[in-house]
Length: 122
Length: 111
Image 1: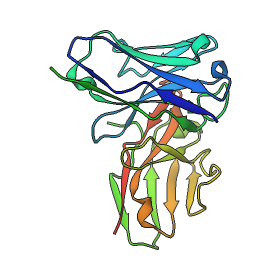
Image 2: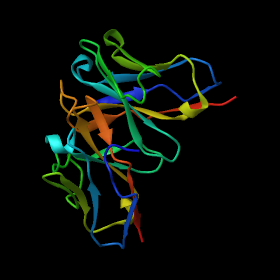
Image 3: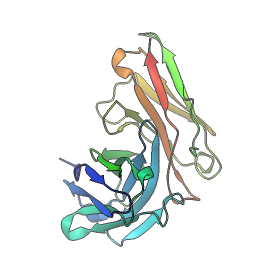
């Protein structure tokens, strides 16, 4: 079964760092783009960035460039999203997601992680 | 503000038909990139509903259909059911961003 399983919910204080994960299984991890999508409480979906694990080609939305770091580890079949200094405004649900076709980032997204809830509060 | 524009809400009675529009710009829909639609039920991850403008993944009922004509894109849902109450999002690839763009989402209420 093709699936993306994300790390559990995190509760952090402002200024702390965090790295959440997305573990892939059931398909060749290296050959599919993985994207990260943010959903603020009660709001819509926002694309944050994409990574192609095979060559680590990484793209960021201008809204998130410099705010987060996206990485992948082929040996772990996992993608990661990390913050060096969290803010209260980072409180959201974060989804990892995979397009339906290998090597393409323009196809529909047919595999989603279950979401990781990040709460940043003092 | 989302790159793709959708109406914030639509509603219809059980059995009726509703449509949700989605508009973009020259760097996404206008460049010929396909539109994809997602259904998000409360507390769950989005689910692919329509890909490639008008194709349904296995298991999606044919009550859901997508269309694209030029830069006009829409999702139609016929035979509305209570279980269709959800948020619906359009999505495409954007050549300027070199990534994904989403609509702001449309909340469907079944009256």
